[in-house]
Length: 292
Image 1 (cartoon, rainbow, N blue to C red):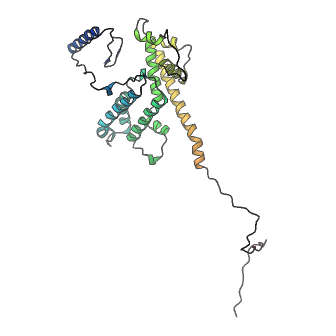
Image 2 (cartoon, helix red, strand yellow):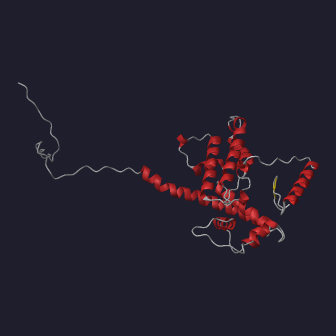
Image 3 (tube, helix red, strand yellow):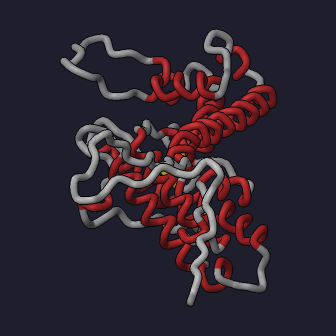
């Protein structure tokens, strides 16, 4: 019961015989409820965690699943001219985004992961809104038209909501023990350290403008914590959009700025051309010719 998430269930045991007994009981209970457990993967490509416990394979798998969900709805929904763009965005938020961010509550993301997710997010929204690269629209403007936040802010909101749920668990629950546990033995490797889930939570709290000292007390109240996380994620999304605009503004000014070329000046006379006569201060005069 400790490792259940949505329709996934991880079984843990100390010995192989115990694991087989738990699996048999689980299959029997599932069949009694009318459920059919999926068979285990037959290839190593389905194992999404690497030996270094990074989520690169998981991100690739999520992108593949989201692309498949988007493709199955492309002709009937996203390319249907009889549907409004608002309706298409609602379908995208209800079907594609949950597929893309499934399990994001437990991710320890790096910037490369968020960039890949944001790129797919932008491609999908531009296809739905029929915005091509020739329109020269910024990513911020696309998000404003779709009325949808960035993937970075959404992932931060999901993780903070899940962390508040873990905080409210009894101390006997395994997820809470894992969250507050620390290694008794071990040494820090030389060089930069790998990110941990606690580091990601601390970063999200700062980005969402939540007090680091009182957040655990506020998380005990479910309604208060959900409102606080929702408002903090909105502020985080605004900060990301403003940062993108500030980063783009200098590039835009340099591109639009026209530099007038200065005429060449020299003090050396040309030996192959006679000097020009001085200009008449009264301006140019009309020349008259008399014909005999």
